[in-house]
Length: 555
Image (cartoon, rainbow, N blue to C red; front, side, top):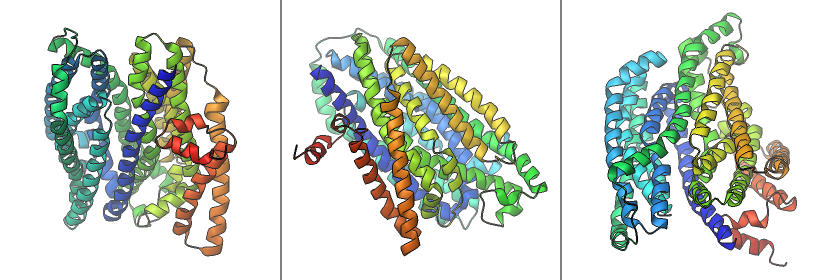
């Protein structure tokens, strides 16, 4: 039992290393968007959005599932001392990844013009798509290396490479966008897209450097292999594909859904905008620039840009941090299932759900209360779009439960189950998009609400399956209600404090920067006082024991 507890703490600490890297990367992603949006505006982001979504689909097909599959297979073989077989998993996966990355890169390069026209009615999105082609190939290689390192329980190389990737990406994208803006908006967006490829190159160089740094240690372990699984390379590739294809399909459903989202925005929204124009309702749109309101194309591009850059970026900041927790628990869940220790599976599932909700609840409430102010603070040169965060922040809670339970199911070897659930949820989302995007009272908010509906259904389906199969008992009060109530009190206190400070001192941006850390302290203190956050929860995060010692020193 003690070993299980130590394993759980080790899992979360490894996950937190990745989570911190994800958080830093996403923070850089938000910060660089500020000067970038200042250069290309919401309309430029509207051109960039479909290009990047096509790129994400390509990444899903080539790379997204590989780290999970490889880390699991490497971890399993290292656990029995089959170090040579663990390394062969890496080599076989690398050959496969290079081939699939090259093929998809060629497909996008030659298909960009057709894709941009057929799916989005936007020929100007073709060049930005082509600028992302090198990244597809480079990320495919990185996916294998990151999976190999994670399978060796080394999260640091992945973490460092993620930060380097985003940092270089941010600098190059902004510099190229400003340099090329004089030529045209399309050229500026293309330059910003190419920054993604340059960032991927530098991240790959980091991973290659780390690999060669530890290669002597890897080779030493390989020579000391105690056993072998007697698997041929063909059998290893088959196992990689069997494990990764369901994950890829599950992930690709949402990537393709994102593609469908933007396609529906660009095909349905123009008609909705036309209805609003005839009814004199354009003033109801979240667009403050009167020049944008004179062009239907500019309106659609602006709204799509708000959705892609502001809503999606800020929602994904806490979501990606939480998703890392879900992915990191997969190897531990797999080990527990292999031993038929379903009590341990239930314990670890509840543990990671609890930690996830402790992050999700304050994130959702914070963006719901301060969404508009956050946008105005971050994007002062293009301050529209805060309403999307206010209406859509609730989805953070649904996404958290959905993604963590998906990680648990994948760890149990039930990859097909979340795939089916995702397909059902996305099918509902398409119907919701058709209805809501066509309503003048909803317009762009329709795709925000359909996202919340989609993930709510996805989360419910996953949880119901876990309850039925492993008989997990989810304490709704402990895991969901208490974190939300504490977060709600935090939201009320911080909202009152913010408005009071602004009324007395003015300077809304400065007051927001003051209120945010105060809100975090309020949430933490209330969480401890109400036992929403326990000493056991704190033990499972880096630095948690030191914090416990300080908090309970007198005791």
